[in-house]
Image 1 (cartoon, rainbow, N blue to C red):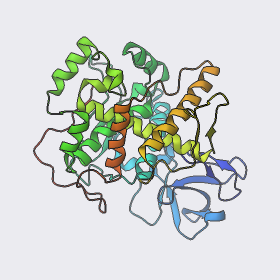
Image 2 (spheres, helix red, strand yellow):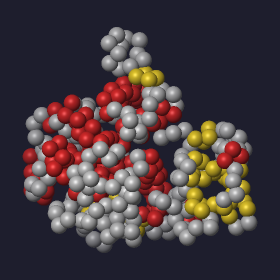
Image 3 (cartoon, one colour):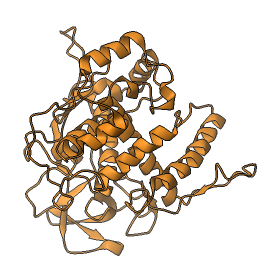
Image 4 (cartoon, one colour):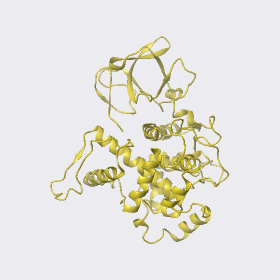
Length: 378
């Protein structure tokens, strides 16, 4: 993610800020320009000031009142909610317990997901705009029921268990499931990968090309998952898959690879914004050397440049984390087959695979085929 500045005083500000700590102006994120705006009250709305001043009236997303969103919408437009919050279907009852604090964490992760989706110019449709549009529900367990909320995807409806926003609870689940990495943002990126499989692969004319890379997705999904949980990942999965869960079924392989593509491109974008250059003194063969001076979100950037720079940057991040006594930031190894899969995702998001319209971002009619299923995570 890029590094932002206050248009009023040029002070460095961050994506979640609502006030500039130097000049005390209110701040809001405007997705169309990918900028933070410095704001002053103007009648019943806000107007931007400083370097990006104009006469357009703005208001905060309606979820601003709960302290969970800082995105802006045109004050003279019809929308009360911003481009991310319009996808919310069910949100927590903020009057109960610590639901508000957990929801705030949910929304931070979700807005960072949307930042990448918008930078990649990917199609986005709400449930109002399309029957299989993208919708989110954040649910907590019913104390009167033995059934637990499961995180997963079902025909565009993404459910995230509210407990995943509790750091301690999420760590318990990560450990019990033997996962090296489990974060809220990781959940969002994985589950939305299922939705984009529907939109870009199934509906986008890329089914056979995708199967050539990820395998035959027509194999029974439930049986594949049962076998995965009963027997564990197949031996040598590291040579072909980005994670052991990716080896369970081609749909999960696609969603896991999609999530890692977003991890990598967004973190490289952050490195570029901060001016990162990785050049270890002992690296005589330049295997861990990279200057991140390219746009990872651009279609013109080759996947090889992305993967080689990521090797250098992620190695440095892991080394820094170890120096702080923390777990590796990126505890994964990208084999050549995985890099090839990332290359497929790179081509897919930039319209080089399939037949979906790039100009309109609209999906074609949904054929009567299998749909990427609900993923169940304890």
